[in-house]
Structures are given as C-alpha cells and as structure tokens.
Length: 164
Image 1 (cartoon, rainbow, N blue to C red):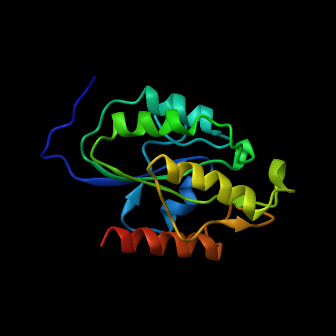
Image 2: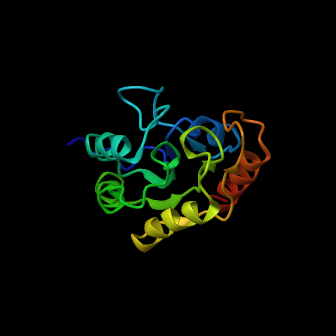
C-alpha cells in the first residue's frame, strides 16, 4: 500500500454521492478526490456499499486531516447498510483523519417518502461508530443538484468553521 510523505499538504475531503461537488463548491477548505469515476471517492447515484468498496481499494493517505461523508440518499438511508465496515475502512485508509457525517437530502427520487427521522436514525449509526455529525444537513428538497441551495451554504460554512 502506498504511504504519502509527511511533508505533503494536510487536506480535508468530501466523499460520497452526487451531492459531494455541491458541498465542496460551498467550502474553501475541503476538496473532492479526483473526477467522478474510477479513481475518486464520489459518484452520482452512489450508495454506501459502493463508497465502502471505493474506500477499501484506496491507497492509505496519512495526510488527510478530515473526511466529510455525504452518503445515504441513494440507499434510502438504509439502517442495515455496512456503516461499521465503512468506518473501519475509513480509519484504515485515513488513519489521521477526523470523520464527519453530513445528513443528506430527502423528498425526491427514491426517498420521496422518507422522513427526517430516517436520516437522523442513519446519522446516529455513524455517530455510534465514531463519526461526528454536522449540525447542518441538506434536508427536504425537490432537487438537491443545485450548488446554490441554502443548505449547501450552511454546510460549507460549518466545514469552514471546523477547519479554522
């Protein structure tokens, strides 16, 4: 497994689904890894199982200081997702990172009938496995694929404040 050099720049990353770029757009301190696709840790339509596999196959990076996870929407916040395994893999691949979970969007697509309670239950499972939960989430929206949504601005500000 590749190990990065200690002199490399410390970085914060956002990983997950198609909402990842909109979160990154609204922060000046976090970035995505690669373009959407094979060598990235974000993908449109991705669910937690996809993200888990992508993380598992990613090279160890000692210089990532913070990982922000934006996932759950495409899996309808399934409480039976392998969250424990994802968290183990994140701690292995990014051993020096603090891990955060971003509550995703509901009210559109396959999750039109989900409630905020479903999202909170899902987030709590991340919390029980060592993730910090951002105060702000994307929440109910008819269309989450718009970088100008007020929720993304709030999430971006929260990430900026964490990394001050």
